[in-house]
Length: 431
Image 1 (cartoon, rainbow, N blue to C red):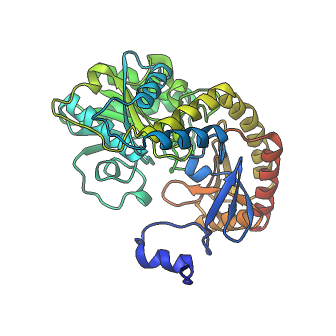
Image 2 (image 1 turned 60 degrees about the horizontal axis):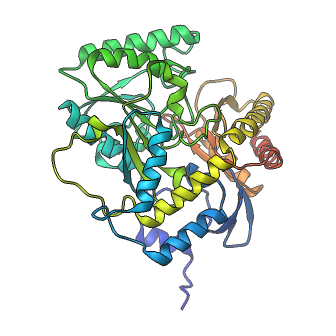
């Protein structure tokens, strides 16, 4: 029998108060196709957020649903205690694509768990619990990853098993270095890193950094900054972890991985991934140099990491992405979309900045004529966009005042134009 109580009321009764929901009247999404989704009332939306950058190729992609169905008909679960052909095949493909020499891959079920595993590897390998992280960062919701998150809106406790030092550089247009040109900005951030290391006691284990900060509002440093950091890290034996949970798989257009914009000193020691590779299935993981990955001296398994069904989805999704050059599409259509967004910004006094690359764009809203964040305006635009048939996200710094745009990588030119038009109407509605 169907429960007549409204779904939102049932949600509030049995789920945590801190489990965020979008919109004054939250919506239930019932199905999707391509770049569109439908809610329980039959409303159709152009999806520019993809379940938080997770529906990477398309909703209900036939190649992925077929792979999931076929694998589920054979065997759904076995754990890592047994040989798992889909897991090995996906690991081989990711290791080859990673750019990390002699790479090993460990699968998890989420980006949080992937970053947690990377921290375990780094601290074990280096025999240190000291971690460098970037200001304004976000790395997950577990106890260890919350402890290295530099965004207070997503860090509910100061308790941590790690000692974290926060470094400047990930936010280009705010903070004490904002007025500098790119070269001077990078030099100042490197000097700050050197200063922070001078304050650390003993050997720091690793720097973890998002090439483009996701929850932080799609902020990023000048290209090459993490390469310059790497030169300092190498002198101290400190590992570099590139958190590619949101930037991986070609979303930024110019590169397959976000770290490749900072590659002058070579690849990271580890990269973490999740979200888009499963196109909605729960896949995360760590890629690391063999000597780092193999540093654990205790037994370990994963019950759900590397599930045959999720690995089959990942293989099919990755094959589709590569076969259809979705990275190239992200570069081409993303470039067009960014042009349209910048034109909207020029006409809107509420937009302080448009930033991003590929199909990963952010619009920062401030009180007109100031640099003060305006989270109320961001919330109003989010609502107005939804009313117009467009789903977008929010994020950013101390206040949630950045509109986050990250549609599936198969977005068409017509859909980019349509989404920009709806967003323009939403911005005009708050003037």
